[in-house]
Length: 238
Image 1 (spheres, one colour):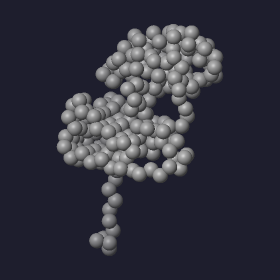
Image 2 (image 1 turned 120 degrees about the vertical axis):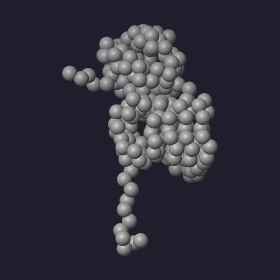
Image 3 (image 1 turned 90 degrees about the vertical axis):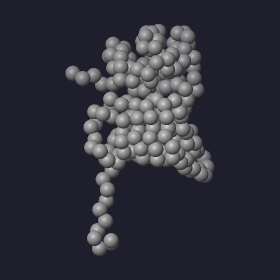
Image 4 (image 1 turned 90 degrees about the horizontal axis):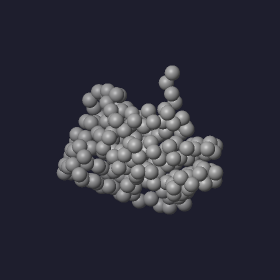
């Protein structure tokens, strides 16, 4: 019988990742973590990790020592915990894990709640984004009309449009915009992410989509990829 997921990682624009614990079944946790690291070893190597307890706040006795050992064994660096209950916080501190701030509202949600006027800017890149480069569109969309090489990273607070071969990492909605999307044609990305939820290259290839323009979006905390079908213009309108 296939086990339900024990956790999910959320990519983050900050130099760390959020590990959201979904189950304290540590045997299957280790198996699933091993599989996740195997798919994208360079992404997880020496990756600082914040442990999110919001989804498991009802479990009082969490073996934080064992959890830390699992992360370190996979060459990750546990920084501390956020969310959860007071009892979990005491236990985490007893196991040398810091308590980190974290709220339910993302930066994007907070801006919307305060009804601030958001001026969305579009950043245009017309030259290839080569390995080792990072392009970030703050408070707006990013349009790249050239290629994105393996080892490069493009990210935006809004949507990301790629009109050349996409082989690097692409992150949309990095400050928490769950409505952000990625639009691309030649999808060979190492990692795609919407508001922290991501797919690795292996995950993308499993969907085996046909050539053509695609959109990547978030639905019920799952990243979806679908083809964009061109609309035919009725003959009488031509």
